[in-house]
Amino acid sequence: MPVFLISCGLTSERRSQPSPSIVQKNVSYTARPYADSPLRKRILVLPFIDEKVSRSSAVTNSAREAVIRQLSKTQSFVIVRNSDLPQDPGKFLNENREYDLEKIAPIASSLGISAIIEGKVLEVKAKRIGDQVGLFREVKAKVETKVRLRIMAARNGRIILEDVRSGSVEASTTRVAEYSFSDRYLEEDPKLIRLSIHQAFNGTISNVVRAIDKISWQGLVALVSGERVFINAGRLSGIQIGDILKVTEEGEEVFDPDTGTFLGKAPGRMKGTVEVVSYFGKDGAICLVHSGSGFKENDQVELY
Image (cartoon, rainbow, N blue to C red; front, top):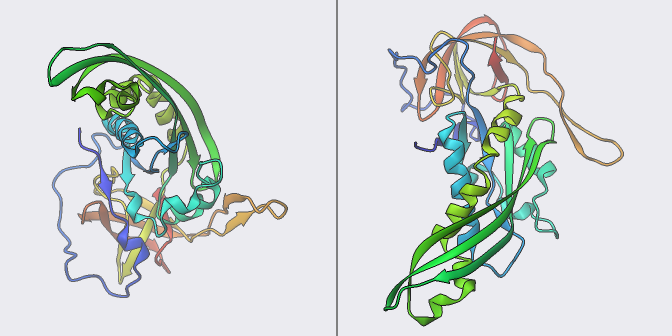
């Protein structure tokens, strides 16, 4: 099952006229099998971090890929590329090697992202339990991993799930030369890590889906041109031709006056409604004004 990866370029680039490459085209099929099917929410899976600084980045990369692979199988999300953030996520790492999610939340929310997922590799243990003689050696090992997931709702900056899971697998991997028998190298084997991480999170993905499902779906107006309103969600997000969307002005960010903690965005004033008439780009939709006026970029949209 492919992972839905999209770019959010339209939301960050302001233009008064639509690009000549945008062409309105009627689509004869629907994005959702049923009218009441849920829309796919945009999520941001940050680069995974490792409790052990000296360990190879291949470990965290494999862990993140394993989680994304399982999330994509649910067909519930559109996963936004980390490169679409205007700032490098690494800038938000604190001294505890954890992301300052409260600072990332307002940025993610402005891109139409519903939830931010942080993964951290807490522990990896590997032990060789067998091998074959020869230059190319098939080593059998037992690998145990412990990983933590934190999920924050981008709109209000609240942690909606924190889960620590462990996984253990016995599998074989091919190694070359004498040094490959070291447990250290087995602890950094992408194949073994991927299998172990998959085992660790095999039972938690349903919890992730349920947690994010509690967040109401929202999209953003990317461009307004006359009676046409371009939004940053289309077929991949589950938008269906004929959907009526409510448009509200962008709410103001609210922070705690004592701690400075981001509390979320206040609801904005309703401006009117638009009707989806076509798709464009990787995941965008073209709407016509149904009622109201005064729509502009970064206004919020949701199912009416």
